[in-house]
Image (cartoon, rainbow, N blue to C red; front, side, top):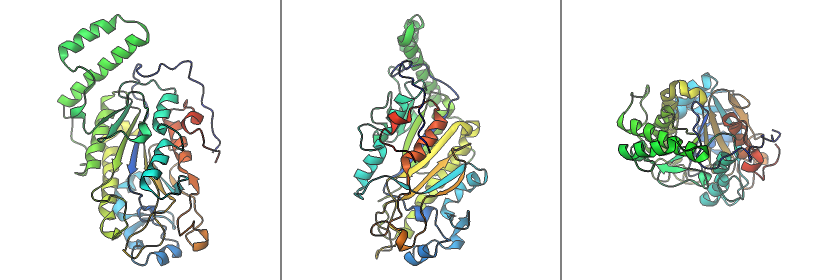
Amino acid sequence: MALKHGKSVAAQRRDFLSVQEQHQPVLVVVFLRGGADGLTLAPPHGDDAYHRARPTLAVSRADLHDLDGYIGLNKSMAGLMPLWENGHLALHHGVGSADETRSHFAAQDLMEHGGRIAGGWLARFLRSGSRQIGPLSSVAIGTTMPESLRGAPGGVVVQSVQEFTVGSDEVQSIGRLRKLYEVAEGPLGEAGRSTLDAISRLRRLRSEPGPAAPEPYPDSQLGRGMREISRLIHAEVGLVASTIDAVGSGLGWDTHFIQSQTIGDLMEDLAGSIRSFVADLGAHADRTRIVVMTEFGRRVSENSSFGTDHGSGSLMLTVGKELPGGAGIFKHFEGLSSDNLLGPGDVPVGKDYRHVLSDLLETVDSGYEVERVFPSLTQA
């Protein structure tokens, strides 16, 4: 992909709060903390070397949905098959970062910063684009601000819409403030009115539970969080980007031990949450993009504890209508025989994860400046 120079918007931007835009594209980032094993989520069942390297952990052909004769989708991820069949799912296999530490914390920081640079890549996207930024443009579902949103204008962290307030939430106070901002001109007036509109929408959202989701969400941290993101999108509060972690229980995706007994529930939760989320969005699904990413993959060979150790290249998923490059499988490694592997036996990083992100970001805001978001990214 040739890097595109988005139109300069520096002279036009009003930093921080501005008038919210409705019915605009939304990006949802799902991070699989712990280093997910892409070779189990989307097994390369057509590669004999895969089966030799994993005598107990290789996913049998009976336990997957074949996609192209070489790559399949684990049956525990079957919730994503309707998206695949509708052309709304892309699998990017053999992607990752330049991390060589195999440390969860270092690899996550590098990936969420978008390189060896201060601040988060998602925060820079919000600042560098042509989209107008409101008080609820970026929302992280959780308890801490992810590094990807570090430095984001107006970024907030919540676990549910019920705990969401913007400034004073009293009806009388809002009325008095609205009278003041109705006569205020320029950016200050616009920012004030935008914030008050967001408060009003959130008040309605908290007081009205809304209709039940067409497909029940998993009763999990991820499922409940995706439900909250859907509510924000439906409420038209000006959301541009949201993030949520998928960690499951215990060690999450860090499957060093008896992987087959732990990863199945994680995959079902991930696929079920995304499937319910897309169904819940209804007409809003057409303007929503989802990316699923993890800090690194797992080694090709299973270890003596019937698990897999930290590796390199892994899997990214993108979900949405009219994905860049289209839906399908994008495989960035030649095969899993030993002469094709990296170092001690890892899937090599055949594509920088930032290229996948930069292409997807263009579908959210075609005017963003890729050089400001990923300044060290080279052409593909």
